[in-house]
Amino acid sequence: MRPPRRPEDDRRNDRGAHPSRDSGPSRDSGPSRDSGPSRDARPSHDDRPARDQAAGDRPRGARPPQGRDRSYQGDRDGRIQGGKPRNDRYRAARDHAHEPRPRADFREPTPSRAIAAELLMDVLDDGRPLDDAVATHPGFHRLEPRDRAHARMLVATVLRRKGEFDRLLGRVMQRPAPEKAMHVLRLGLADLRVLSTPDHAAVDNAVRLAQAGGLGGLSGLVNAVLRRLAAEGDQIAAAAKIDPKRENLPRWLRASWEAAYGVETTDAIAEVLLREPPIDLSVRNPREAAAWAEKLGGRAVGGRTVRLDRAEGGVDRLEGYDEGAWWVQDLAATLPAMLLGDVKGKLVYDLCAAPGGKTAQLAAAGAHVTAVDRSARRMMRLGENMARLGFTDVTPVTADLLEWRPEGAADAVLLDAPCSGTGTLRRRPDLAWSKRPDQVAELAELQEKLLEAALKLVKPGGVVVYATCSLEPSEGEDLVRRVLDRGFDAERVPIGADELPARLGVAINAAGELRTTPALLADAGGMDGFFAVRLRRRDAA
Ligand SMILES: C[S@@+](CC[C@H](N)C(=O)[O-])C[C@H]1O[C@@H](n2cnc3c(N)ncnc32)[C@H](O)[C@@H]1O
Image 1 (cartoon, protein in one colour):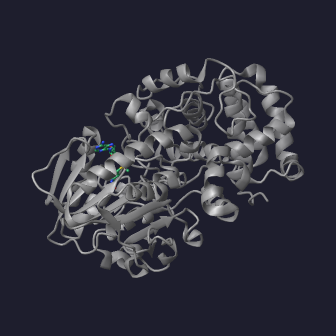
Image 2 (image 1 turned 180 degrees about the horizontal axis):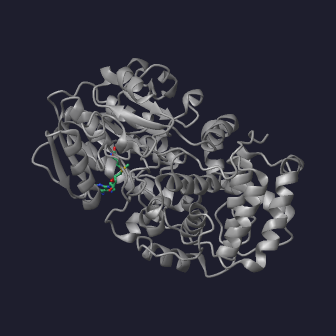
C-alpha cells in the first residue's frame, strides 16, 4: 500500500534533524545511537590508519565501489559486477575515503535533489560513509536547513529501499541504465513511493535532475520508467511479490539475522528499518525525564530517554542543549552503562569511550571516569561534549587499549567495542551496503583482544561490561562464549530484569546477556540493536 498523498506539489520533509550517528557538522543533522553527548553534528572521522578504519566500528570502511555502470539488479549480496577486481577498487576507495571531493555532478534543478544524487554517488559508487559524505559535501552545508533535511531524507530513503527500488526498476527496464541515471530513478521512486510527492512532480523533478546531471539523453527513459511506475507500481510490486521487508537487506545480513533470530523477528527488524527513527535524548538526571519530555514535546521511554519525532532546525536549538541537560543517545545505547550498577565514587575505566555517550552516563552517576579511546579526533569531541555537559570528573586518555598500561586497576570497566554497527542501520542505512561479512569476522578478532585487555584492567572481583551495537552474534554471544571457554578467569554475572527499564526484561537471553534488536518496542519507535554482557573477574586465589 502506498501512503496517502500530501497535497503539496513538491513536498519537503520537514524533520529538522535527521538522526544519524555522527552525522555531519550541521546542527540540523542530529546524531543517534551514541553519537555522543553533543549536538553530534560532526564528521565521524577518526584518525586510525585507513586499514583499521575500514574494519572499524563506524562507517569508516569504504565499501567496495560498485562502479557507475553497475547493473541495477543482483547487488543485494554486495557483489561487484564487472569493472576492476574488487580488492583494487576497494583499496582505492578506502585510501580516499576521507578526502572531501567537491562534487559538481548535478547542476541544481532543486538543490536538495541534486545534492541527494551526489551523496548517493559518494556512498554507493565511491564507498564513502554517508556521515562523512554529508559532512564534507560543500553544497550540502550551503542549503537551507529545511533543504538539508530534505536531501538527507531522500538519500536515507533510497538507502533504506534500494533493494526494493532496484527490483521494481528491473521489472520495467530492459537493461540497466548507467549508475548515475539509476540514482536519479531511485530518487524518483523515493519521491513516488515513500515521500508522497505527487506523481507529476516526482517525475518532473527526476527528469530535470537527469538533465542537470548531464543525462539529458536518458531523460526520456527516466520519464517513461517513472510514469509507468507511478501508474502501475503497486500492481507490478504485487505481481513480482516485491515485499519491502524482504528486499532491502543484503543477503548475507538477512541470512545472519534469520539464523540468529528467526524469520519472523528478522522480518520485524526489517520492517522497523524502513522507517525514519526517532531522536533519543538521554537526560542527565533520569528523574527529570518526564519533565523534559513535556518541555520538548516528546515522550519519556526507558530509564532516562526523551524520544522526539523531530527537532526543527537541529537538536542544538532545543531547550536544555546549551545548559547540558541532555545528550543525544539511542535508548539501547543507554543500557550497557546501567549494567555496572551503582558507580558513585568508583573508579571506572570507560574503554573505547569516544565521543562519550556512555562516559556522560557514568559521570552523571557520580563515577570517577577515565575515558580511553585511540582516536584523537573522537577524543576531542569527547572533551567538547564533557565541557558542554559540565562533567569535570572525567580523565581523558588518548591511547590504544591494546597498549594502554594504567597505574592501577579499576573498580569497574565498560568496553563499548568497535563493531560492524549492524544494530544501527535505522540511523545509518548506508552500512547495509558497505559492510561485508569478512569485515565482521575481522572485527570479532579485534573485539576478542580488546575484551581480554579489558578483563585485565579491572580489580579482581570487579565487573567488566562488554557491549557492541551489532546484531551479529559473532560480535556478541558467540565471542563471549569463546572467550569464556578459553578459560579466562571470569564468569558471567547474569543481568536481571529489574536492572533494566520497564518492558526491556524480554531483552535478556538465556545466558543472562542483553540482546536488543530494532524490533524491540517497535510500537514506540524501536531502538538500536545492542549486545551486552557483564563479566566478573574472579578473585585471585
Ligand atoms: C562504539 S564506539 C564508542 C562509542 C562510545 N563508547 C560512546 O558511547 O559514545 C567505539 C570506539 O572504539 C574506538 N577504538 C577502536 N579500537 C580501539 C583501540 N584499539 N583502543 C582504543 N579505542 C579503540 C574507536 O575510536 C571508537 O571511538
